[in-house]
Every structure is written in C-alpha cells, then in structure tokens.
Image 1: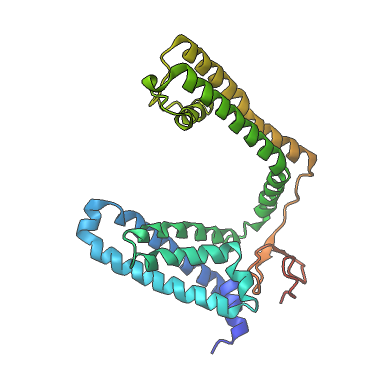
Image 2: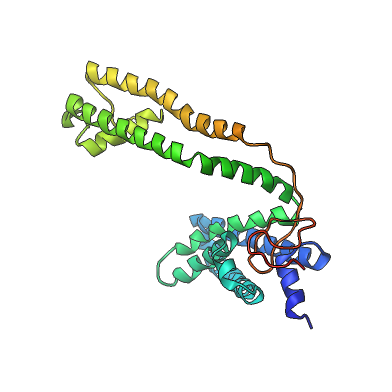
Length: 268
C-alpha cells in the first residue's frame, strides 16, 4: 500500500521509473483527449462516431478530475497548487466538459488540455531551458512600462487618424463612424489590409499611404524595447531543474537545492 508521501512523489516528480511512467501515461491521456476534441469538431466524423467521442471525453474528464483532486489532496498547501499556473490549467482542462451539460459545444474547449503537455519539459529533463524562458520573461516585465506608453501612443495615433479619415472620406465611402474609421486605421497601421474598407478620395489615399509607412516604423519599436532590455541583462546560465515541489508545484528546483525557492518548503 502506497503511503501519502510516496504517492506525492509519484504524482509530482519524474526522477524514477514509477513517477516517469505516471507522467508518460498522463501525457498519452492528454494527447488522446485533445485528439478526440479535434475529431469531434469534424461534422462528418461527429455524425458517425459522435456517441463514441462523447463517452471517450467523459472517460478522459473522469480520469483528469480524479488526478486534479489527488494533486490537491497530496500537496500540503492546496491553495498554492490551485492558484499556480498548472493548477489553473488542470482545472480549465476539466471544466468545459462539465459546462457542456448546460451550454452546448463547450466540451470542444477541452483542447486547452494541450497546455498540460508542457509537463513534458520536466519529464524529458528540459528544465535547463526554463532559465532562458525566465530571462525572456524578466526582460518583458522590465519593458512593460515602456511598452504600455508605446501602446498608448499608438492608440492616440489611431484615434487621430481614424477621425481624420472619417472627416475626409465620410459614410459614403464606408467610414460610417469614428470607431469604424479607427478599425480601418488599426488594420492599415499593422499592414494587415483586409480591404473591407478602402479610401476613395486622393487625400484619403494619401493619408492611407502615410499610415502604411508609419506602420512599418511602429512595428519595430516593441522589438527594440525588449531587445535593449535583454542587452542590459546577463545571459542566463543553463540549469538542470530536476524536481518539482510537492507542496506548491513549483517546477524550478535545481540540483542541490535544499528548499523550494517559491514557498520555502524543505525538499525531500
């Protein structure tokens, strides 16, 4: 009979045969459930195998629900797990099917389970690359204020350009309101160009050309902001993350750590 500590090791770790087997089976189930959700969206397949897909989805959801409850029970700090990234993903992975009893087709949203495949990072010992991910994340956080200011400036330009185009072109050329004209300005500024609304007057076409050229300059700005922030930081070292915390599910415990760097719990 497995005690709670051994069971927690199997569920949260992947550094021995049994725990790795548990994770591999879990990944197979996740992949299978996502495949079923995708196939269920194909009408011809749904007409022929819809009932089978339905029962398979219920089966997957039942197993994932047991796993979710098991993780909450095994951790000593349930709220830490529930509010963690993987805790939220695990919950969202089972909710769509239960919601489908009240709202039609919401079970298709179960494809969010694909996010759970990120656990393969721990299983294949790819944790050393999380240092690079943290490096990029920290650079983005440090650039947040500058990017927010940049976005506010872009929205101001969109408002002004949209208003100008509304005055120049008017409703007769498709610019029926300032919000619609702002939509056109955003589409043009980002060089998407759907073509559902187009300027017809020479002055309007000139303004559209200005916005297009401005768009090329604006697109490069966020990249430059983040790149400059990354250049200020030291290149991260490569770490081999071998464990995850059984108390808060933090998956960045390095080899040699005695305590979890997130919740401070002693590592077994």
